[in-house]
Length: 191
Ligand code: ADP
Image 1 (cartoon, rainbow, N blue to C red):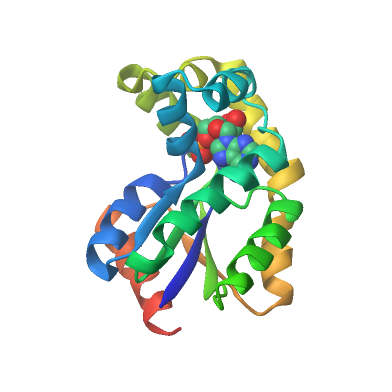
Image 2: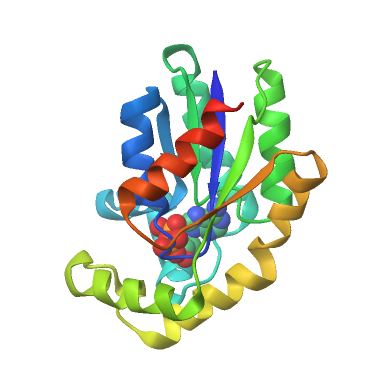
């Protein structure tokens, strides 16, 4: 069973690569951004709470995110061959909570794979996606800048968390989608 954390800044290509990975390895895609957008669309209490953070490009509070992921793991753990965590953990507190949550089920993270993409490329990709995605956080340069800053300040330390456990690998996230996918696959195949 593979439990993979796909890591990288907004616009790094985590969603695109996750789709290919779930198909190849039969994994469950657990994207906290997608889950929040689903709640938002359904107008749940959680969605209403998350909206104000998401619209500003800030992080939703840890306890809210952790509770949502815990629910998802509990409901799917018996019917999956593993997980791709996408957009989670985004803080060290979330990473610690994830380790504990998996340990309860006798599971652990196989590794974190980080997609490296320079900031100018990220911004260009997000602005392009914003033309069709209906995501308000993709359509405003200020919000994009906030998200990148939040990533650098709060999320980057999560790489150290897995690095200390010898579970960190990085991949060049610029180039052909299939080439990047092949690089990620070779890391997974080495687990
Ligand atoms: P991107 O990686 O393109 O910024 P996501 O779809 O992963 O977008 O997330 C969109 C928004 O959802 C984030 O800006 C944040 O407000 C919220 N969010 C998603 N995942 C988390 C998380 N793990 N912790 C806190 N907030 C989160």
